[in-house]
Length: 156
Image 1 (cartoon, rainbow, N blue to C red):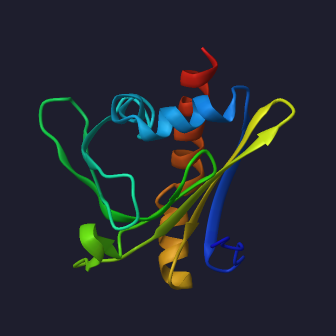
Image 2: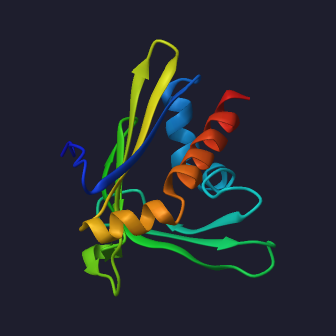
C-alpha cells in the first residue's frame, strides 16, 4: 500500500534527517525514544501501548506538566514495514475494532537519502472539513516541530 497524496484531503511534512534510516526507525519504534519527540515540547508524551504490527494497538497520552495525562492517540497500526513505513489510524483501535471517533490516518515513510533519511509524515483525512480543521489546529507547526525534535534526537 503506497498512499499517494490527495492534494485536497492530505497534509504532509517532510525533512531530510542527517542520520541513517535505521536510527530514525528505532527512534520511532522504541517507546522511550518515541516519547522524547512525538509531541511539541514542553508538552510530554507517554506511550501506553505500541503493538507494532497490523491490527496492533497504538495508544499515547499527553501532559503539560507531567503530573496529569490525558488521551492523545487511540488507534491501530495498519502497516509496519520495517525501516520503510508505518501506517496508523484513529478510525480503528486494536484488533481492528472500530473506534468511537475518527479523524486521521497517518502514513510515515522513510527512505535512504545521500544526506541521511528522507522522512515524510502524511495525514490523510476523510473530507475537506477534517483536513481544514487539522490545518487550523496547527498541523504544519506541530508536525514540523515534532519532526525537528525527531531529527534533533537522532542527529545528536
